[in-house]
Amino acid sequence: MEVKNKVVIVTGASEGIGLATARLLSQHGATVVLSARNSHKLQALERELPNTVAIPADMKNPDDIKSLVDQTVAKFGRVDILINNAGQALYGPLHQVSLDEFESIVELNIFGPLRAMQAVIPYMKKQGGGAIINVSSGTSKMVLPNAGAYAATKAAMNMLSLVARQELEAENIIVSVIYPYITAAKLGENAFGREWRPVSSNAVSKNLPPPHSAEHVASEIIQLIASGEAEKVLTP
Image 1 (cartoon, helix red, strand yellow):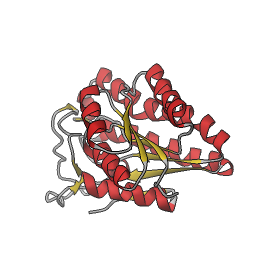
Image 2 (tube, one colour):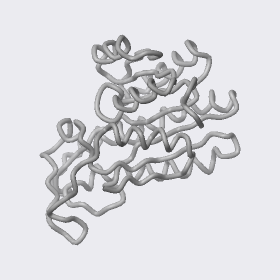
Image 3 (tube, helix red, strand yellow):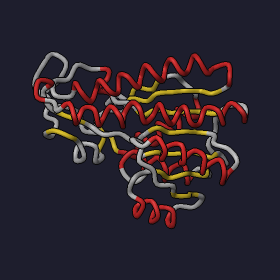
Image 4 (cartoon, helix red, strand yellow):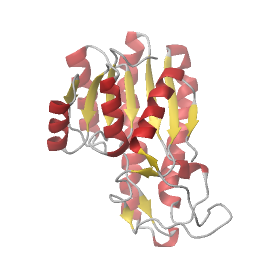
């Protein structure tokens, strides 16, 4: 699917990968619905970026998610692409992980994307198709000490994505999942637990390659929308 003239919802659009993706979509001629909790940042972006509209939403709130999708369809008549990008990290040894914090990221990283998918799918079926991009993490493909809780939520997203892809194929709804490498964004700053410092193991080098830029990940997301591939792993 080409993004020009398409209506695209981007969650977590106020910073990082979501912000870079929203900017690139706008440059490519898409109509972009900017969603995040920070309404002030979204309103500033709406003024800055052409063909965008800000609809604040907390992706841990089912009512907000439904309202986000319903408002999008009410305003534009359709929703062509959903980019499930909002998420939060949790770092630390599993024996020290706070279950309350883990429950919070499960709500955001798993329930939020699933609820958003469930909200857009009926509209996409009616309009004859659509695309859903779920932003996972390379940590879900590795065994990284101190990242187990976060990686577990992204591994769940992977399975939801790949199963949904098969279930929705006949409806012309293409579900894809992208696995960013370490990205120069604010995920670490906003994470629960201590800053991630992976310990030495067979799976982790002491000298990790430099992180990707959020703009690089955004360009890969646009390419994934165009190709419709099931998965895209970003390696350094």
